[in-house]
Image 1 (cartoon, helix red, strand yellow):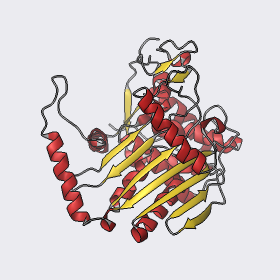
Image 2 (tube, one colour):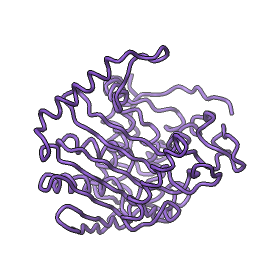
Image 3 (cartoon, one colour):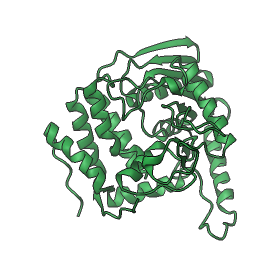
Length: 355
């Protein structure tokens, strides 16, 4: 497949968020929930995680229209004990429900030192870092994960069983950004392949395999993604399925449903959170200072010949955020072409391109 070098057009962050929120509100979702979903999507674009940005909006709309997403869920919070809770999302948008879960986990951790929570019967939640960063803003450390439909082969296998099963954490510091790791337990997130397909690009060898187990270079030939680091990513993906899937009650990845190919069926995803209140263990200001000293030590290490400098998890995304907040969010024409029909369908003006 030939590479596509189409120009990227830039749009204002707030303009994209307003458009996304307006479209979602037209589908019947509560305005406050629509604002949260829009912010999660656009913030992904701002941080350079375009695979989890507004490219997802058409699929969300289709899932509401076809019945897969419940626009007005009856969300139920169950307190399991003093520091553990569960949430039944009733098939609603995962983003506002995950926000509720993070806020509940922070509240309980502030009281008891730590907390654990699980969400069941949920749908797509977008960029995981959005939620862990919220906890870091409150001087907490949150580890979060979610299971998703099967796309990743177990180590040594050829057929998918696990989802890309992302896991994320954020740690506050006195620097301008939180240390934030947000990664799929596969070599690459599914959204990266979707992005390559939208832009007419091949994918690198080592991302995925065909039905015969050979390396896949075309998005159309992908049968399964590979776990990152071979058996290491496989082991982490299994752990995510156990915590997010089995503990929550939704089951492992094969019992969940796809966002794009099954719009009339709830995804039935499970999410998991473990939150630590830093102040319960040590002085939080001193802790943040120690983290910043750790960052300084790491960045003082000499870089390898082909590397500019040692970076921290979340640092490159923060640099991208600064650039895109200043110059606008770039969208390729292929993504614009999928968003423009929503403007016509719902009578919502598409944002003007920045000069």
